[in-house]
Image (tube, rainbow, N blue to C red; front, side, top):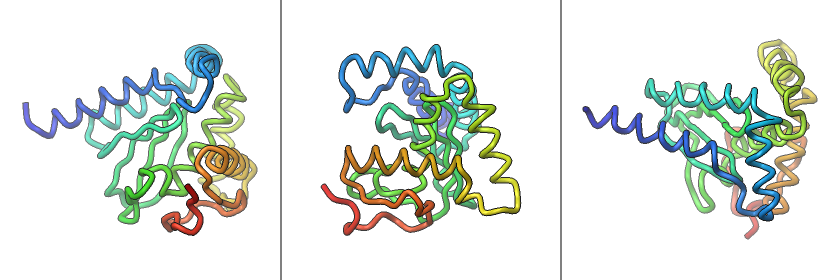
Length: 191
């Protein structure tokens, strides 16, 4: 078996383990609830996200797998654009050359990662309604000609990201500042 396929399988294994990752910043019962919710209330998007992300890894469309807060990030680092999709506890990213890992890791240095993390909060809140209410609405907006960055689903994700990353990591980020291709700077990453 070639090194390339071993790498694909390694990423696939990390993605499978991601099904069972929880947020270490939560209480014990909070972590139990996060895991229970993932396999009950959020089951449609958990299965969809896991299969989608796993499929990407098995065909070589994932260069790295990271986890933060119980969320699994699968990234194609040398992508042609800058976009993300959140399904359950899985965030799939296609990022161009600006994606960098720095002090604090991939997620804490990237607005797109934090924004997509914010969508996972709606997955937990909306449960089985996430795909038709949030997911489909966001997809239609992204494919449309309007300003997707000010669409209600995107502003909700920004609010969730601002709240979580501000409280847990001291990141200062405006909920109205849609993710850009700029790295979070030392001035707005407080530790």
